[in-house]
Length: 98
Length: 382
Image (tube, rainbow over all chains, first blue to last red; front, side, top):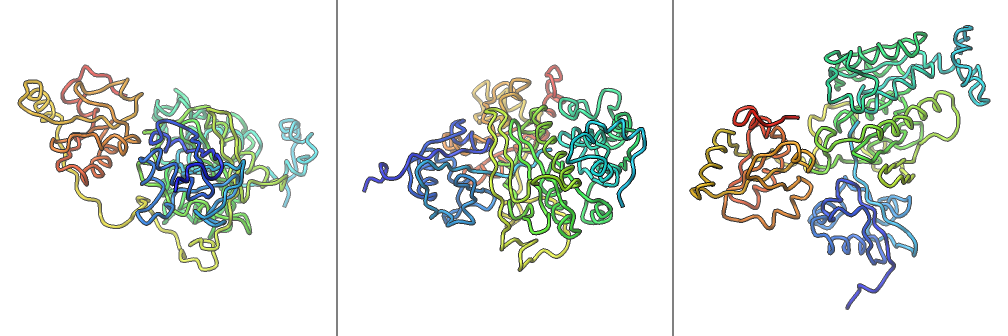
């Protein structure tokens, strides 16, 4: 089944350190109903992001935080978190510079 | 006990005192307060100056570095006159010039699990302006055990983050970031660069949050993460939950004491495989032979574009570390790949990764700096 038309248009904000793997983009538009679909769509567009975001077991890497609007999906339903129309995903990676 | 203010102090702090929510009482609280700043670098510099100017009674500063010229683009507490001077002494001089009425306690040491409790325990608030993950986890853990709020901030290029951890009932740094990213996603300021004025934006938030905590004023950045993107001038405030599974502050905590994390890696499995190296002299010889079609290999510069623009080895190809995963698939599978960076550290990490897919990967020993020193002294260095 073609799922590309299902879901909402969701902007995904990328941290600076991941932007090179997304062709330099700071925000990528995907179409998705859940966070997991958004991550899959993102990786389909930019395969280089795959190993940065997910483990081989398809779990979110522990150094990556995924937010839907201001909420960390680790405290919602993880990759199964539903995205409502108009919501935004922010990917976050720790930085240590000082 | 709340301090009383002298006539000099009343005059000096008059613009604070005239704010209703500060007043003489708030200013006296600042005078009685003790704040430690970890790191006198990009974040520590403005923070220390604002704490001094604000009249925080005791300001501690710990850093084991000396002032270098490459610091001066952002570490505004230091200057030409203190090049080569320990940063904490340089900071002490400047802070005393700003405000001789406060006490500065400089500590020229590196924070470790062994000295951390002794250094932190005398302070009411700790501000983390360090520049590496092991120190950040150490500061967080020590603050947790000692019950001291930690005002945390970090920067990378044009982006900054800040939050307040370890305030009673609130989350800690490990709740937000259970694990540090792998080195390829965590370039240091030296490798990745940092925009000088961006440090001031983040440091100002840290100084403000520390002073708010002392004054018990307003809503502290507890349970919230402030993100700033200087490129787009966009600010986001994200929620930071207290993690019930946190190994430090959760109900089933497994971390019970401080440990030094010499290296925080995403997959602390086995020891990394050894990486073969090539000397600058041998590379020069092989490049010469490649020019005569007697040798064939790929020479890859893994640094950033700006570094390439400063100096490069003729015959190399630029593939910045962050783009390696995407571009390595197109590398020839049957030839040697020789990688280099500024001094060999980054390219060693890249070589280790490439070694899993390519039969022979060599790291240029000492990087382009060694090349410039030993093969072509006419090249500029940075």
